[in-house]
Length: 145
Image (cartoon, rainbow, N blue to C red):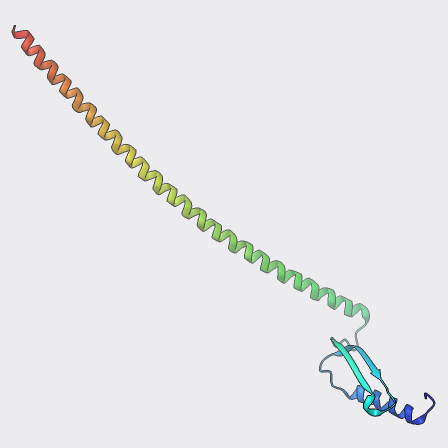
């Protein structure tokens, strides 16, 4: 069948059709041509698109790929650091809010303690005055007898 001129014509037409296909800016990674006994049975399979690297050596292609990977890693690192900074700011705000609430609570407790202390001092002073008055009263009564 390979020596058949009709078969050779079909193969060349299939290759020409494959070459004439527009894959956009890339080239397929995989291309298969299935040639059957009838023209309707012939199929062309393509899979994946490779970036257009025409005119570049393999080392240039690899360098470009490494540069893209480095750029991607750098971008991901920047995003990660940005998220970390945002989390730190949020935690700082929460911490500051907690500290402020504790200061207010401490101030309230201190004021409460101060009021209780003042009341105790007032009660002690009142009781002391009452004792002194009682003693003065006793002395004045006892001194007259």
